[in-house]
Image (cartoon, rainbow, N blue to C red; front, top):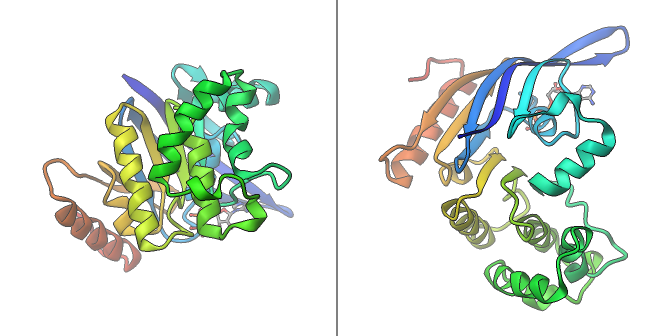
Length: 252
Ligand SMILES: Nc1ncnc2c1ncn2[C@@H]1O[C@H](COP(=O)(O)OP(=O)(O)OP(=O)(O)O)[C@@H](O)[C@H]1O
């Protein structure tokens, strides 16, 4: 079943009198249960694309549907409701609230959805252990490191068990041990049926996905499927594609 469908997405930003094209013509579909990475050079339009899929921004033209809902037609209120219900965000700017401790930050989306406290606690225990944040739950976001904040934010995104997880550089602030843990957790939730779409600069992070899309010049320039490849073989292919794309060579 197609979960997310983008057709001829174009996005321009107004810069004074000039208009700058960030996305020229993007079309692709994501099936329910897929695990997709999006790569591309700095400025290629990855965050722009993610923001459009997250209903935080609207395309200038083109069609985008999630589970049959036309995301372009949602009002601000409808978009907020939609995000809470359907999406889990693991974004770079964490967005944790400093007036709540980490536990309450993680619980916040469940409180908004009126999930009983016992159920909230049950969901948190395993997640916190896997992300190694159990000892940090009583602290405030300002009292933990950038990498720890990122793991708290990941717990907050995963605890709602959203159908679609959108991640922007999910391992950006993490050391290699924490990165591997988060990516293993992503693997598990993906195997349990949740769909993941992540933007990353890291070929290693992308090698955990099942499919990698490369953006260049505002279009999907190339894509790779992991298929039966080992993670190492897939990583080598991603790195080779990235090199060719950056150096202007051909990709295969
Ligand atoms: N609000 C904005 N106003 C004007 N231009 C913007 C805006 N946001 C992004 N851009 C431009 O659109 C292009 C794509 O930006 P975007 O942030 O999507 O790239 P990216 O691939 O995520 O880059 P990075 O890897 O560095 O985060 C860039 O040229 C950027 O300068």
